[in-house]
Image 1: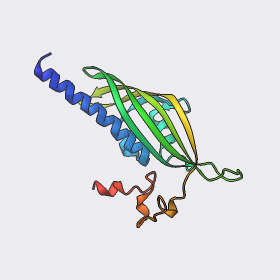
Image 2 (image 1 turned 180 degrees about the horizontal axis):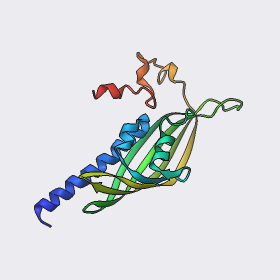
Image 3 (image 1 turned 135 degrees about the horizontal axis):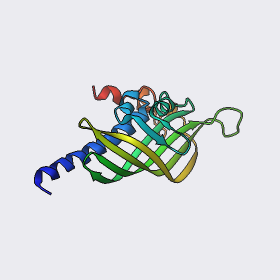
Image 4 (image 1 turned 135 degrees about the vertical axis):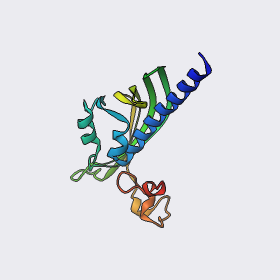
Length: 179
């Protein structure tokens, strides 16, 4: 492989990783623009608990279930099998979800849960841009951490000085940080 081909591949791999990072950020903030910029409109997604085309997926994620009050997707390493304008990627993910399980239950209120798994993505480069053409989520483990702490009380017994210190699903402070 010549130097220009190696550089092109290096840049493509970096753009693939950026696409995956952008998507995680968009999902955590329920940001339709970031999510849409990460998927091709003709893409398909299968999370096991949801399967559908991009329009259905976007409607499922944005605005998101009211019962899921906070999420965080932490991406690990990506193994990328690269071939010019197509790539397959397996990316490790740990996702945290704060879920409001509702009323009428002795454990009612918000619960913290965590899932470990892998995204299997097929990506395509079209008109110089990498996006996901299909995604499958594989689940490796799940943990219910139980009742969530009350954020209105701060953290570790110390009150927050501003409301924006907790949460990201709606009104995330970092949205204004990068402007």
